[in-house]
Amino acid sequence: MSSNRHKKRLVQQGVERLRRKQGWDPAKVVRQSAQDKLQQLDQDSRNHSTYEASQDCPACTDARRESGDDTALCDHHLSKAMGF
Image (cartoon, rainbow, N blue to C red; front, side, top):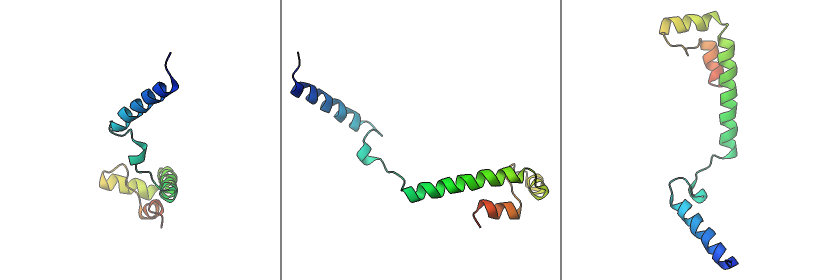
């Protein structure tokens, strides 16, 4: 039967092996700030609602046809997507 000290040493060795692998060291992970996450969520929500509304917009349909870009928006919806 192994001692607790031996078990702890085995666990510590396993942790060290994992931390040496790319992307496994939690101390080296760069995390987004809460403010950045909120801004990103706000932008994602704005994009989703704007593109949904643009499906029924004749000006957006014209902009898509003229540009050949399926994601093109009219000036009004583009300014909404950009947060203006």
